[in-house]
Image 1 (cartoon, helix red, strand yellow):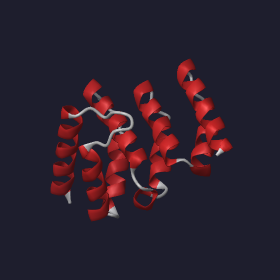
Image 2: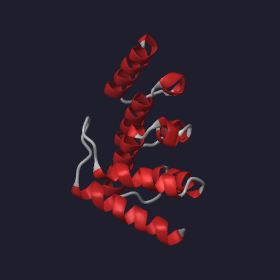
Image 3: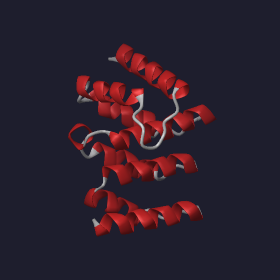
Length: 144
């Protein structure tokens, strides 16, 4: 499993570096994340959670990769990510990095549902523009 994790992480980070994640456009890394979760249904989610929620010695590139992977995670089918998407996004909201919190909020918006609304309602955002975005998302989700 260790070799598979190292290979997955290297491939993921190369794809995220070479091809920016853009709103509304598919990304080649989506497929490798989905394949990894399908191949390793027990260990894969635990590894992804530790990868996305790490905090020690993060470079700017690490933070960008975490934020981009959170965005991709929000695009994954519910049947694949289950409650893991909500759990990871909820914990990522505690990050000190605004890009990571923004990506976690976006992932929750994509995942949708009652769980996303509950998580967002409990989140106390300190950055004004992001707090406004959270309020807007909550309002939209409740009206659907």
